[in-house]
Amino acid sequence: MGKISVTKINTLTGHKDCIYTLERSGTSNIFFSAGGDGLVAQWNLSGEKDGHLIANLPNSVYALHYLKTLNSLIVGQNFEGIHIIDLETNQEKASLKLTEAAIFDIKTLKDLIFVGTGDGTLFIVDLKRVNVIKKIKFSDQSVRSIAVNEANDELAIGYSDNHIRILDLKDFSLKREILAHKNSVFTLKYSPDYRHLLSGSRDAHLKIWDVNRDYELTESIVAHMYAINNIAFSPDKNYFVTCSMDKSIKVWSAREYKLLKVIDKARHAGHGTSVNKLLWSEYSDLLVSASDDRSISIWDIKMIEN
Image (tube, rainbow, N blue to C red; front, side, top):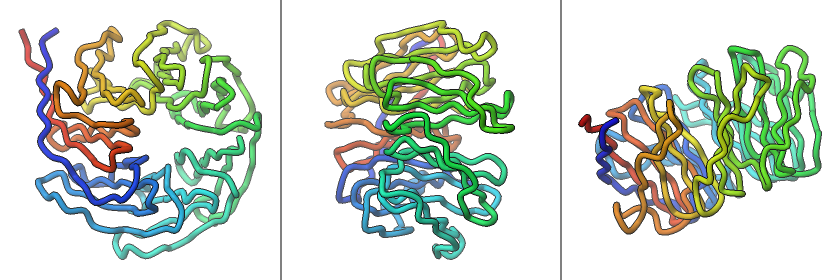
């Protein structure tokens, strides 16, 4: 395998507090961000440095989710609920008060919205009617991450009680409960072929689970110095990246799970504080990272063959 070249090509600023989440749109060069200031912004990777305000909410936002079928953005407002914003008009088309807790993750499948909250509840919301059809609670500790496996009709949920729980999407029954880490499961991501589930935790470990072998653990890697906040795959599916509270981004081989590159402040003018979210765009294969330092960095990552 060849070497990896990393170039920081842009720094985007405008948020007034930590940036917690990034989300893609229906157009490869457009993405969204949100954070502790309650601002939801739209950005353009094609060279523009200024963002456009989509929404200004009174509470922090940890979770965004793009709805391609409706060209809308679901925004999780902490301590309140979800807002569905029409991106053609930037107007709110629906909202739903859910909880007094934080909202850590939002995913969708067909006409269902899955919302994970800080009191350990998974809310299942009917998208068309925008009402709660089911509440699932296995723990009093936070639901931190959600991943959808369309191939197996499964939902993977990462909790702050150190467990990963696998639900059957047909009836939302519990299929498997895994004591996965020694601390909160902050991020989950299925591999693009759905054969593996990757988990990252506050314990700094990256773990690889074999989906077709009843989620058998196949790799356990001390991947960072501190909590792993997010995982994202490259558009060509050959690589993935992790980011951490240790301020670094790491590039890995998706085939061998080997570390290929470390992106940090000393070597690449990386972030000065925790890196919270990653988005590897199909637009020129640019990698986007968001941090507690209130900035978004845009990275050009090239694979150089030997």
